Length: 178
Image (tube, rainbow, N blue to C red; front, side):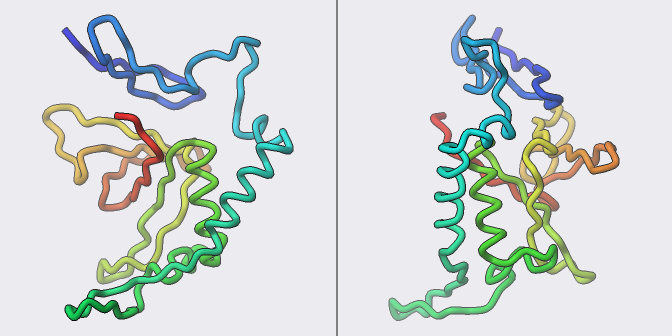
């Protein structure tokens, strides 16, 4: 019988899925280094080539404009204003800083997570980046039905964990081969 397994790695619960009987799909970062030295975000960024590569890629993508366009129906597009023109404004990030942070999270962790900031009427005001190490995505139990199909447990600065669904969290998945 094929089952999902959950392991604890660096304080995060990770789901491991069997791809065939007796064969588990392990995330690459769970495979131990031959030297026995654990590689973390901090240790990776202490290598000048890694730091420069992440800074160059994230900084370059961060300079690309964030625009919302609407098809006008005649084959043309019209620019309209939306929260995506400056999604990090509500948390004090410039559009460049916001994009750069998201890309750095994708490069270093494989995923990025955004907290949806809403106004009193429920309108989306902005998207606040959350460090991926603070987020633990979980598949629900069969009797649960979260919006978007997953739970996102977020650890706050005070150490408390809060559970959210896709109503409050926007995940951005990195590259995947499955």
